[in-house]
Image 1 (cartoon, rainbow, N blue to C red):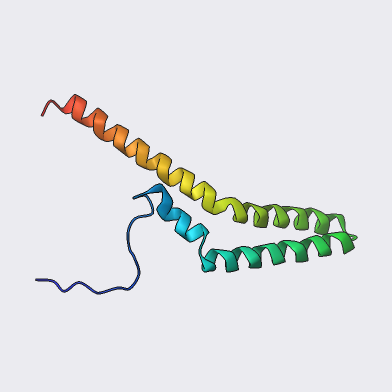
Image 2 (spheres, rainbow, N blue to C red):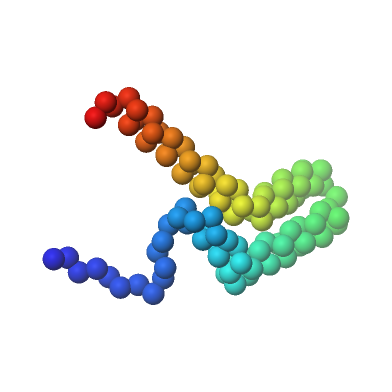
Length: 101
């Protein structure tokens, strides 16, 4: 009989319930990550206001946009995870309908 490794981490799928992913969004880890991202954006905005080079301005603009997208990423992942779960259920229904088992 294989021995299962014990873990203190709850390994339930984030797709099990809509509220499970919200635990991450309300966690201290996400708060710290979000704070670091927002501090990075503030730093880049400060550099943007001091920049004189057009190339640097364009680069900073794209970098700021990418960091701002990171803030919205967990909500997007949650939405996609639940959408994918719905698609899988529909595929199972379609398979059962056409398999004549």
